[in-house]
Length: 353
Image (cartoon, rainbow, N blue to C red; front, side, top):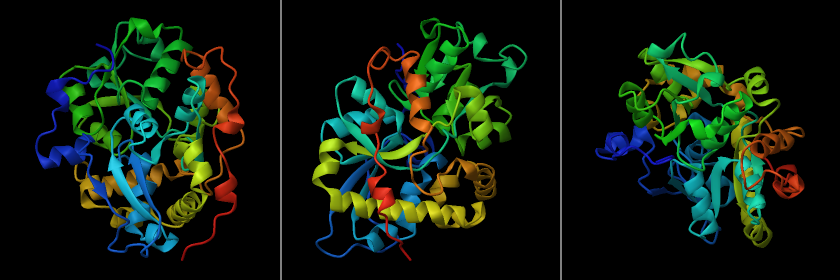
């Protein structure tokens, strides 16, 4: 069945597997690095769509730097490997915000729901389409996806959105493919090894681990601006913090403090090397690929991170164009992009030292 994870691949067993695969433990962590915000500070629960992925690095890095506490907000981070599931938890009121791709706010508006990005963390997706090594020369582009099993994080995730778009753009009906939710890290790698998928979309540090072990080759690379424009037609804002509009309107002080922490984190990323960033991250984040490879991957893709947190002016239109190509919740709908994000809090962000 489409989007269902293969039980043999995604079984969350040993603690080490939990870290590397992105299988969600639903565990929470406080406003970290040993520092806590002052008593009486607001508490915000944020679910992140795979915290160990480099594309979501600002969430844990802000904690490791102590920026949540300095901004005066208590943050509880929860790990959920699939963005679609995180969005459902947001709508159900289980969490206050989601660390996920901005495109979910567009899809939600198409479904009659209102959510908005309050800070843009990635200017481009940072995603890579990888195919099994034995298919090199056979699969040359998404035009060869017909009849193929394609790995995605899970149904309704942004990797699902992007995979369907790339397939459609290349003249292949997504219905002629099998999209399988295989998560990231160990589960994604296992799917390649077992030939449960032919190609799949994933991010660093999984990409480096796949290449290191010669398990696959890169078909499409959206870790660069040029690669993203070639694949998607323009700048594609990705990782953001999005919340329901009702929450944003009623918790402006808490949202501002959060955004202060993230803007400071984005600036810190730009001012430091991959090795310096890796030194701040929990060892579990690079255990599968090694600290040096993790740092090297960060150096090579630092350009994916938004240096200031503002929504790129041309970005929302690209996201809408992608979703309009295949997503029934968006296709043919009148979408007001101005309601899917706000720059209000980034523009008012105050420095953190």
